[in-house]
Image (cartoon, rainbow, N blue to C red; front, side, top):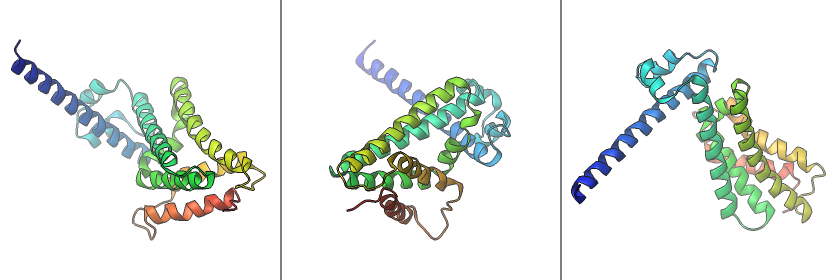
Amino acid sequence: MGESANAAASSAKEQTMARTRSTRDAILDAAVDRFERLGYHGTTMRDIARGADLTVASIYSHFPSKQQMLQDIMVRVLSDGLALTRSAVLRAGRRPDEQLSALMHAWLLFHTERRAEALVGASEIRSLDPHGRRLIVALRDEQEAMFRDVVMRGVEDGGFATPYPADAVRALIAMGTSVPSWYCPDGELTPEQMAQRYVRLAAATVESGR
């Protein structure tokens, strides 16, 4: 096979993979919408197929079960949240107070801009099978460790005066995860305004002296 034939075959393969990814994304987006509105157990494969404008048979060619969709949604949202917050901390200054501000800012932006996915991720962990639960708990633990590392370093260097760092960490995480249950994109506060407000709340929670 010549170079032109190889290039054509490679291009066709890439196009097929792109269509597959696009279809999978459309299915997951439809699943997020239905899980948010109807709940995981109240959603049928037919509901998801209707939302994605596909047949039920087409859905099964991409996902073996509704459970697999839920796991993929939760892995995607938690992995994206981890990547965003990790990048924010790495770009911040070296002081824990600077890192906490960046971390909380990213955490709140994520939970307002990815509201539906985050809400499903926070509310449907009870619907996961044992394998899925282990996977999601590991990702949640990784996110918690990021908050804990920043807060504990702030306590150790005297910048944070809270006598309850473990409770402070849980409170900071909950600040973000609770937002999707009530935040309205058409409300009076933009995601950026929300993020700035919660940065101040985070500083107060750890009793930052800076």
